Image 1: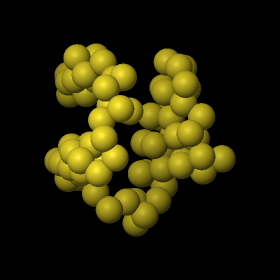
Image 2 (image 1 turned 120 degrees about the vertical axis):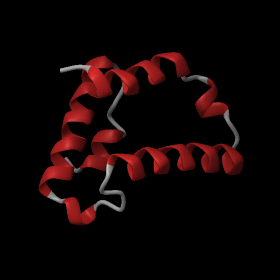
Image 3 (image 1 turned 90 degrees about the vertical axis):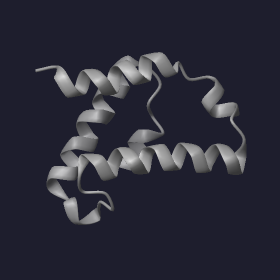
Image 4 (image 1 turned 30 degrees about the horizontal axis):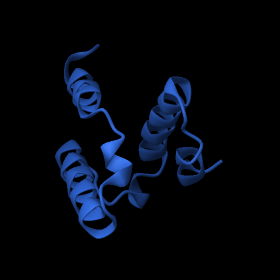
Length: 81
């Protein structure tokens, strides 16, 4: 299964963890396919995509997210061993 197909199969904690591990593996195996090859470019692009997607299509999909949990997830990636 390719990474975009796997993204569509994320529905719970376990499939999200599997997806994150697959995303990391995809970067390691095929960095030439990645537009954003540094952590800062990656996070800037994630932020830009969220902003653009919400402006273009509305925020219905994003209103369901728990932003505090997402912030904690990304922060913990900075400090967790």
